[in-house]
Every structure is written in structure tokens, then in C-alpha cells.
Length: 478
Image 1 (cartoon, rainbow, N blue to C red):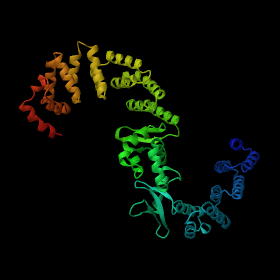
Image 2 (tube, rainbow, N blue to C red; image 1 turned 90 degrees about the horizontal axis):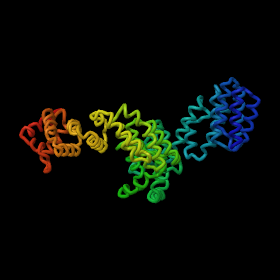
Image 3 (cartoon, helix red, strand yellow; image 1 turned 30 degrees about the vertical axis):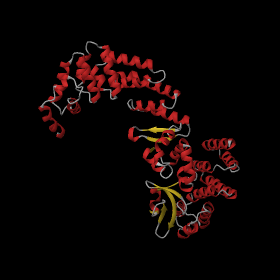
């Protein structure tokens, strides 16, 4: 392999400097390699052709074809002959027959080979490469081929009807599904032998045992078998018939801990994929973290930190680097970032320092408006109460007209009343009642709070007929 790699690099250099004697010598050496690097030689042939040495390129290609045929490497020989036909303006009968012969050898095990060639004879075609593509399309979807019918499941092709130009796919249901051959590339995906979904068709019992006995490994193999990142619903569908629904929750809790599993998105749109190795997964998540927008970075940091202490430390470093810019551009998000950072290795000191600067320099309302996370917002309110003992009741009362979480509204009102600021609560409640359309969440909270057993006096006094009169109008107004 080392000699082959070195010779290919030398061949590329020789083509660049147009040392054609050296090119011929290296080409002949590479024809003796085991295996012959066919794909790389075809690329080199194209470079020689572009350099204007068309006769040399053709001669070297013919040598490649002869060598591959003698080596009994039918797949590579077909690729090389295809290239030779492509270079020929009007391929003669001998070349067309050679192309068909190469196909016969490459697809010798295909059940429908003779029937397809009888319908589409390459040796008689005016455009042999176009006919070859049609033949290969049929043979790629021959009888017995295990496929995924996108959106419906996996199964086998049970019939290739050349007269009607359609395929019949058995998905294990009551009736096979018919797919036009022209739509095969769009709707059907051939499954590699040994892949998870292929085994679901060919070895369902063995795969069941594997899925239940090795959840993490099975999930990694399943994700490798799917097309791109998958949502939980897609993963569940792929496990249908392999894992009882009653075992899903415990299975999923174990399976998703595999170190190669990667996640993207958030909430109900969370998607899963698999990396080549655990280090690749960590590296990919770290890159995603660095490139993400500042708010999305918080969820990614938590996700990366859950992989282990080293990953958590790396996530902390990224978040710490972002604090200085956020303190100026988005104080609320800087506070939330510090809240996440504080729980990561080495993050407590920079998080505490950041929050101290924010409490000292930021306008309280601006700070609170930028904090979307309720626990972080409640922590900011408590911090403002501590650092501004003479101002906090005014800050809290003003925030009453912005807060939308019912539990936090209850907490704030009770604390203000206990601090002797019932008049400020009254002012806020009056503003809410004056314009409930402007304060819908707070108005609904107030309607519920007035009937609570432990409601404070400023709240209970609002239980009046006028409040009940406003409720229908507020709920129906758009």
C-alpha cells in the first residue's frame, strides 16, 4: 500500500511537470499493484487528457482494461471499459460487445441479467452508455434486493416487471407495493449487506437479540444505517418489530449514552446521528459549540458537558471566552451563560465575576428582559435584592409588569408585601387591570390568584365584579 501511495503521488507530480516517459513507467508499475488503484488511475488518465496527450491517455487506458480483464476484476474492468467507451465518438461493435461482456461478468449473479439484456442489448445500442445506465438501474433493483422504501419501511424486491416497467416490493404487509422503475432512485434505497436495516429483513430474530442485549451498540448501528440525522420517531419506527414498546423507555435511556452518538437541534426537534468514533463525536460537538449563536450555545454546552469531565472543561472554556462580548451586547444572555458556566469545571470564578459586573453596570430592567430562563431570572431578581437594598422594591414592582411566569409573580408579590411595599403592588395591579390586553399573561394570573387561599391582601381586594366583567372581553379579543 505504501508503494502504491508513493507511486500515485509520483504519477501526479510527473503529469504536472509533463514528464511523459516517467508517467508511462509509473503507470506500468501501478498495473502490477495488488489491488490495482483503478479509480486513481482513471483520474490520472483525465489529467493526462487535459494536458493534451490524448493518444497517450487512451493507450494507457487500454493497458488498464487489458490488465484488469486478465486479473479477473470484473467491477474495475467495467469501470475502465466504460471510460474507454466514453472517450470514443462512435464506439464500434467490438467495443460495445466488450462493454456488454464486462457487464455480464460484473453482474453474473443477477437473476434478471439475461432478461434485462434481451430487452436492452448494449452490443446493439447506438448510445451504449445510456443503455448501460438503464440496465444497471434494473440490476441494482433486481429480484431479492433488500431495500428501504422511503417513508414506509424495509423489505425485498419480489418482482422486476420489464414489460410494465415497475418493481414490486414486499414490505411484509398484506400487499406488495408497486414502484415504477423510473421512480426507483427517488423512493428506493438499496441497503448494504450486514447493515442494521438489511439485517432487519434477513435476520430479524438475531437482530432482536442484539437490540435488547446491546442497546448502545444497536443504536449506533441503526443510526449508521439511516439516511442522515434521525428524530426519535424515526428511530422508534426502525425498531418496530424488534423491541417491545414496553421496553422502549429503559432501552432508550441506555442506548443514547453511546459515546459516538451526536445530537443536534433542541426540544421536540432533537436529532441523533453517529460519529466514526468517540473522539470524532466530541470534536464535532465542540466545533458546533464554537460556531453556534450565543443562545443556542447554552444547550450545546450542557450536551457536551454530559459526555465527561474533559468535555465539560472544554465547554466551560468556550463559554468563558464569550462572556466579555455578551456583557456589552446582551447582558441578560451573559447572565444565563454565567449560570451554565458556574456548574462546569473551572467555571465558578469567571461566572461569579461576570454576574458581579452585570449587577454593577447593567440597567436592571434591561438585564431582566434578556434572561429567558426562569430560574436564572429568579436568581437575578434575588441578586438585585441583595446588592440594591434601597432600590429593590421599585425594581421588582416595575418587573411585575413584565414577568409572565405565575409562580414567580406569586413569589414577587408576597415578598413585596412582606417588605412593606404593598402600595407598589397596588400600582402594578392597577396597571394590569387598566389594560389587560397589554398584559394578558399577568391578567390571567391575577384572575387565578384572587381565589387562592394564601393570596395577599392587595390581590384579594381585586376580586370585584369589574374583574369578572373584563374576563370574557379579554379572552375573546384578538
